[in-house]
Image (cartoon, rainbow over all chains, first blue to last red; front, side):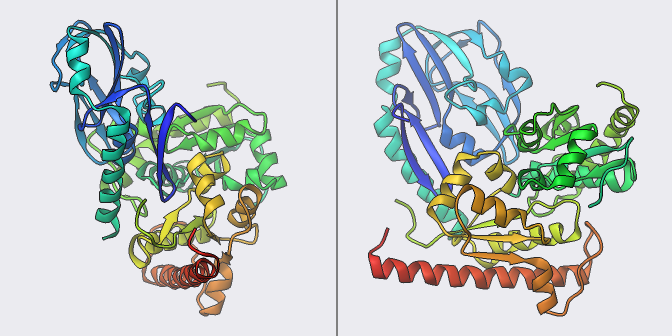
Length: 151
Length: 139
Length: 146
């Protein structure tokens, strides 16, 4: 799949979508003009487990880059969702209401979280990691997680 | 593992080994078959469908089926659908937790106390579904 | 990338309808979590059968050990069907017979006797892992690391 950078550990395949930007908090943003679609990274959903309960912010909420935009509960933990961009929520993924585990199934596809109308697209993009830069960070995180599990 | 008599309901649990939800699917199925509706609910090992076990396939095709999947990959449901049959009651165990959030299951090899309790609750809730399916009702 | 240790896929049958299926599940988890962590990877049989990319990909690239609860040998057959012959195909009734242990009669709520059976099976699986790792290392030394 050319649209992704991939790394494998044991049986797990970790994917990074090339046309997205990323945060170290494990969120992605696909920015097109003044709009962004945002979601949870593949590494995050794999390492934290199946999402059981998702709490989102309301339509129209004004978010700032780095601010909480809800939370998700998995079998392992409750994780804050951190906005990678600044702007107004214009769409909350309706499919996640009944099926929050779409975040696990397709973190870059059907599992997107919000569509956001951006206040400062260039500023936001400048503060985010490129896919390649995030990929290197993610690979290191994968190794660290494995060391924690296996010693 | 004999043939399933009529008026029985086949239960297929994914029993996924890597996740708590798989363990919950398995335990819920066992509760249903051993305690809640013994003699009516019948367990069949899921992989038998894929290795073309004749009796297992016949049971699934000729009786109403409840599938208990541990995750959205829905292996149990898909295995039945691969035989050309629509599952009468497909379920994902995560749904039981979201309906009973005080009972958070943990453990993969063996469930914790809350998980075992959740399996009991889930099986209790499924008892009436088994009854309806055994009577030939459409869910 | 990653820790350079030979990895072996463990494929347990997911038998729910037989006590041996429970023995299988518990024994495999002991191996994965306690006896050989870091050397073994759980292959979820239902996911493997349903076309799970990760399960099938791993089984195609790494040696697998299947553990079956009965003669129907679902794990061994499915593994061979979808990725290739396992390096070892273990059968729980054979293992228990070897150790002169009776087959448990309960599907769950195992007591001391059943736990002993689980441990015996887990030890056999662990030995099979060691053999598979040694064979993998021999091949790597002969042909160069993969």
